[in-house]
Figure: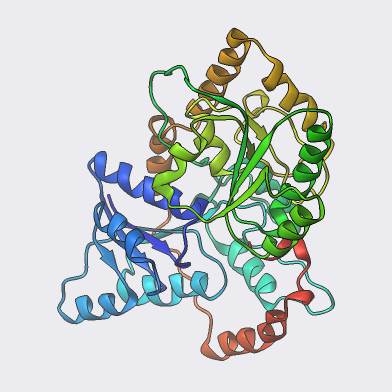
Amino acid sequence: MNILFIRDYPFIDGTFTLLLRQAYHAKKDGHNPYFLFLNKNIETSLLVEVKGICPVYFPGDLSRLKSENNLPPIEVIHGILSGDRLYDCYDTIKAKYFPGAAVVIGFYHPRTFIIKTHGWPSPDVKMYKKLFSKIPAQNLLFMNDVVRKEHESYFHLDFSKSPLVPIMVDVPAQYVPRKNVNKNKIVSVGRLVYFKNYISPLINLLASLRKKGYAFEYHIYGEGELMDEVKTIINKLDAGHYVYLHGRIEYADFNSIVNDALLFVGMGTSIIESSRQGVPGLQAIESCQEDATYGWFFQQQGYEVGEQIAGKKTGSYEPFILQAYTSSEDEYALLCEKSWLRAREFSAEKVMQTYYSVLQNADKKFSFHIPVWKRYMIKLMRQPLKWKPLIKKDYRGR
């Protein structure tokens, strides 16, 4: 298959690394991946990394290649897109350049297309519903059943026939026992945004544990709109000597950052990536601002990676942290191996065959056109939402 992966945002996050891994394994398995960036402001290091896997294009390149009658024979277009970028996927990329290709849209966040506002409705929501009601079910893929059900509930549509293709990571086929673990080190890696606001309650908990005589330290990697709030909490608790804000990291540094940690706290791709190294992960809960976790990631079922699940039992992080800290060498080794086993459920060799099947069965005929005047009206009505207070906090930074 000739697969065109589309990326809109120029920064690295879980969806970017997912697309990158999918492209890498597609090439490895004999397919022909291509990458289209819709934003030219991508960092040079990321661009170099992608070019090491497959050809990279920007929108202007497609125009040139078309004029030269040299466009690649794309069969499937796969994007994790929203807003204008989603509409462009049909109106421009498919219609103008690859009319014979299937468009497959990925839902890799519980709120990929869900926007809740205060007093000013998002014009995109109505358009999303119209589009999703028409797209063939096999052309929409969801990362797990929770994300699928949340979008079903919000749009009042039935996505039950749409396939599930979970987050995929590279996981070693054999477990390698961990050495030189720092039993005081706890790590989180992720954007500091409102739907990932588990950082603040964890800092408060660690401050309490320090008063009890424990010497835990918390290493936080990431940037985002909650940075000032986190800094304020650290200063208020005088926690700067054990809570460290490291800022953003290069993806290549992830393994070395978490390798010696007692445990990892997080959600999404990062908790799978830490687990693949045998680092026990505590599953944070999306949009939860309390000291609450679903527990060890290896105890969870299905492909859920931190989404809110109504009625599911939660508990404080404290007993789990102390369980890891006070465990014997053999007990801790078992926690580590169970974590690796859980990550294996998301391994490339298990997920990619399902992914290829979805792409091969996607409908190539479906297209969708939004008139220019309607696109203009959507942009016009979207302008007030640039004032962030109009968007509910948990729906910003999606």
